[in-house]
Image (cartoon, rainbow over all chains, first blue to last red; front, side, top):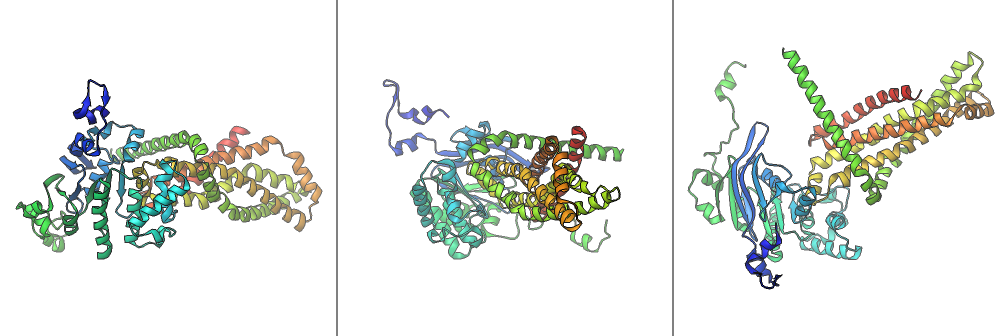
Length: 296
Length: 256
């Protein structure tokens, strides 16, 4: 993307110079849409995951991607981070089609990302401290003293400064998730992606993570994408939600709007109803026939 | 017709796998110089993991293989009253064949399986994906250091195996069976040329490349489940063993 595009509203032709701008002006100069998914198709073998998916993720918001299990929420994150390549369509980040980036460009883009994986994905041969320091050691020339300071600050933010010398195998699930969160934000990313951050957490850890997501988004001025199907937590933390089912976005809006949505699909998901468009049973032959009929 | 289709299908799958392996190998080679100079500490760590941690098994095996060679050589040569040549026979066998081959097989069993399962588990627990997302290329950080660590370790382990093997043969032939110590070492020294030693070195380097790249490949391509990692580990040993034995024959035939 041309840098002039960012400055176009305040670009001075007369001086041929870029006028100094405030952060507020900068953010106004940028489009509201941070990530745009356009007409995206994606299949795994014969199974279609997304068909003509369109989605916009707004800058500065916490955007939730919700949907029943197996609907492709994590796949969507992988497409946004170009860990997967769509069959058709585009993923635009700040207006740049990420499919056009070479490996160096892609890695530059990924430096703007922080990602919290479902299981934390901590590097098991390194201590908590070294895990959080890992991106700094890889991408910066910071001295050991400064690295120590930054890492301890990030660990303090997630309440685990005292666990810095522990190995990942010594951590509980919730602690590992918090360490992974510290690692995800250690490079001060623009975009933090959380893949199922609430799965398997006890209520205390869940509350801590919910608060951390909100606090970091607001204090660091970043954008967050949270993939989850925990409606209660998502309602607390998100500014806007997209509900995905059958390979497309079936509803979008803030939690209150989704709660009021009267469509069958949204109602079933938001209220956890057993009957509705999303079948509880995987496709199967007739039950009685299968139990008592002759085996083929 | 169905049989033909299945054969064609298998052939295509083989070509596809072989092509992917070749591309992976080219990538390993491509990134090797950069990784060697820029991430030397990682390479040293892998030399320790693959090499230093294998020394005990290599030495114990070398001692007993050498002992057996001493016994067999003595028993065979005694029939022709040529037991002084025990050193030559055991030495040639160890330096040119047994040393590189058995070290490669032991390496596949000890270090190769460790490499494949470690990388497979890293994949299964999203550690490789996490690196990708942190803009760190797993080829630079994980694969190539392990590949280079294996290549450096193999000739060193082979040298250790051969030396301990010669010592084992000496213990059996000289100390146990009474072969003259001077005859044992002098005849070995006189008979052995630089070409013989370089044959062993060439083999150990080639086996190092093959064993390390196969282990890294199998780990990287493991199905990310417990069963998948187990299968990848097994395949590492089987494929390395077969590749080493075939290559051993080819190199020997070429160098003779």
